[in-house]
Image (cartoon, rainbow, N blue to C red; front, side):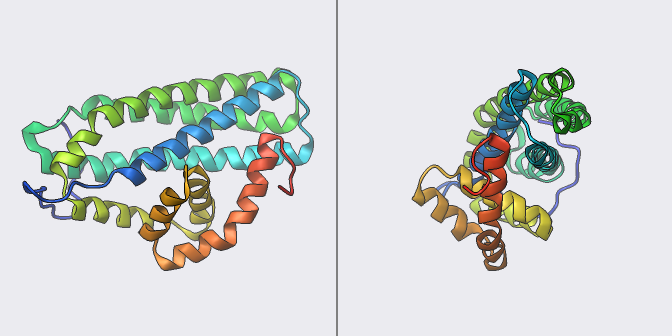
Length: 237
């Protein structure tokens, strides 16, 4: 296992008999990122195919896309600089090799750059110009799907086996502290929207600091309207 970044905090590996770290919220974040990228790719393909994209929707699509791509970029950076060193320190020689996943992150960031550069074409509602956006976003969504599946297959068992619940909670808290209000107003409703059932949403809320729960409550209706507009549904839905 390779993790070159310094440890963000002192770690204590999980001891035999201690509860396993709960990777539910990590999986939820992955599901949100995959869903957001796939939505962008599908909508871009529709626009490239001639689907209607009025100016309001085009502007919303570009803004929504930039926010999604920013979250994917931030997520990969947090894993490289914070989570991977924690996993490496806790697991030692018993862990999977992180180097291929780190290389994947670099490749994903390159794809994010291409997709971001192509996004503004969607606001022009020009099917020919939107084709480049659709290609770049679909390539990103496909690569992210493959990467996340590998990461969850290789790393999640190591986290559950070797990382203490306390240290994983410290990682999640550190990530939350590094989130600005504007970013939280997008990311939290996105995560809440990704929850599959009330129990999963309750778990998300329980792990969210009280001030950020206020942000979620205030931002969620507007976020849903933006999502529906981007997806082609009613703007007031």
